[in-house]
Image (cartoon, rainbow, N blue to C red; front, side):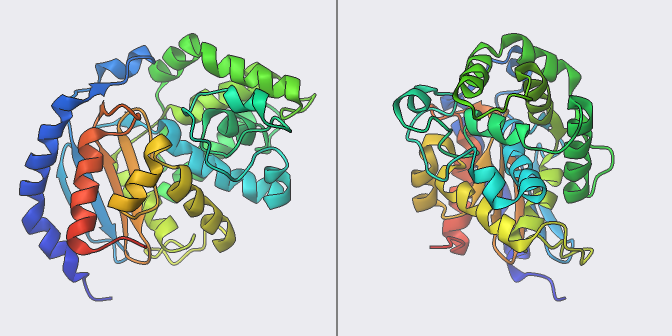
Length: 316
């Protein structure tokens, strides 16, 4: 497999683009509603772009560890689809964007039958988490972590206990959402709210790097097959579903704007991470903890828009 010619061009241009995007960080704020996240350096920015032959380009603070937060929702959705199939998953969660904040419960009460609109908002991800096979929360999370490690090709991947405890201690809105789901019958009679939330908080607290995200994104870029090892890790149909949600819902209430300006399937998290991909070419991981008003990395979004525009990566 010959090297992708865009990688060399990217190496040459990234230093200038990184400087321009890093300057945007001052316009945002690091997430503080989970107290442990507030410790992240606001001016950090890192990126890793990984190609099918394993060659990569990386720059900035790409070694900075951070937790996956909402990025993990893409992969718990994929695992739930493997466990329960489309019928089982979409009996509990819908397929539509909400137009509301990611932690809103508004439409759970206003719209029948009261199930979450999609798997990437908090309520939807909590419902999806409840569908993962396992007899106990420990069993469920063990399977989640094993799946994340397999897709990232990193057996050392683990969750950050300090972030997990910080998130669990302050998650009053998420608990409200979960009890609302229980009352609506979206969580089953056998689903104990605190058990489901334990798994949810832990998978959000899985600690990662830009390199890990790029590796996971590369598998999605090649429809569930790891192009480096040649192994099929996820059925193509399920990756197709996940990537569609990434386009329509992956960047919170800025998903439409990101689709117009960058045109790539992506999922962000409030720790400042963004996982995105160029189908059939690259997996990309970005971190920039300073967030814009929609909860996305302000410097990371600017960098991805710059890269996509220059190389004409948009899928549209």
